[in-house]
Length: 125
Image 1: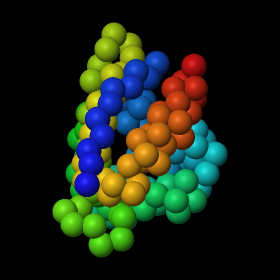
Image 2: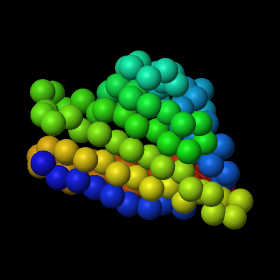
Image 3: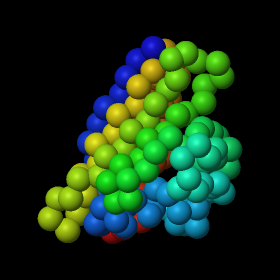
Image 4: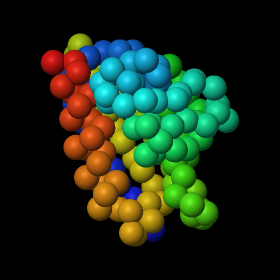
């Protein structure tokens, strides 16, 4: 199991970034793919037309999102924590993804940047 941590800078306020990560309509706008998401702890979510699935664990609007990502029966669970830090009128996103299966690490670590945060940055430019 491996862990991944990285910071991203998004040209939008933390509230706008939070909405882009939690509102299914906004998620679909910047990903171009169907998304199922609610801000209810314990609810399941699906991103990129089912390519990513998991469970929402907790939310702090405009500040924090914690999710469990499914990789079969991986123990301990794979946990994603996204912290949103104000940086002027922009946001510094602190991403932490723990317990990534070794076989998925390269795909996940590359995917966070290429398919997740680069499109989100482009959405706000």
